[in-house]
Image (cartoon, rainbow, N blue to C red; front, side, top):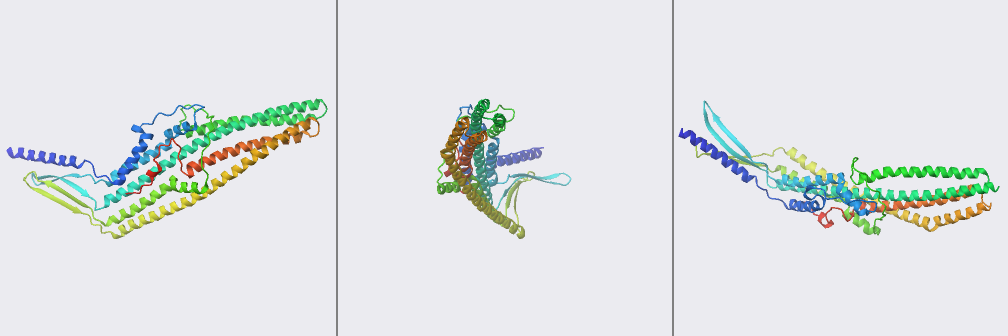
Length: 459
């Protein structure tokens, strides 16, 4: 009886000791430098973007809200940005997983003949070979850096989408205003044609021509008014608003994108800040770390443990094991695959650098072309077309110009004004593209890291 109680006590004490060891072993591992830096960066962004994992209060938008308010609303509310943020957060957490030891294992062994003659609870711990955990942590750290730049790209894309929608809406109002002014002019021309017809100085077809032009322009104005609906839907989507949420107010304040267009400086800025390049550079560092990790495959892993004999105290069974990395072809293939991954990542980086240079050259050419077009339209063509229309109207009243020539002067004046609006729209969208998507310069309200904190290398 006493022996049975002793065995039970020993068994309970052994289990309690093992559980205590598990509890102590389940404390915290040793964080790497890259992990600490990644968590610090995450904390900085989280404080602005998702404090306490909650979205901050959005600004109350109105038609008189600034473009900055619309941008703030989009950056905090856009689900595509949020998805990239949580992808980055998960990758930062994965650094801890990668550098941590495997969980210890609780083991039991027993020998049974006719009765239970031996019972041995134990504890086993696996230890990856020297340097393997650090190598895995470097891979995870570089991956988290790439995920951050994906988040930054999503932020800049969201800002661009808002600016594009706002600019299109603003200049749509300009087109509608010009079309209505022209419609009023056409109705006035119709009255002039009627008066000329009654005086025998013009034919009735002149009146019909004016009416046809007015009817066509009336339909065009209706089409322009109707086109506001898809543009508002684009703005709503850019702000991250769902179908069941109220439509946002229509912005009426126009704010241009400030940008210094010194080509050399701006291209240097693009190569230093463009998040697509930084993400690909982080992938190269991840591939380099993966090569180092693959080379560690030839290092054996170890396991150690201890079992306590309950029936025959005090008696302990130490245990140890070691893997035998003998499959050299597998190790060679792992290293070759990692090296190929690095070459592919480096090639993608080079291709993106080339593509960025081409995109930059194309956008800066577009800006220069648009600037020249606007200068010609505003300083030459529109004033001359307006003067030509005024002369044609006066000449038509005196019978010196026929009605088709008068209508041609009217169309020319309208078309030049509409071209001016179209070119100003293109200029603003081009500036936003250069600033956000190419140069990678974020708006003031963007919840991003300072540029100096995004150049850390994987450690």
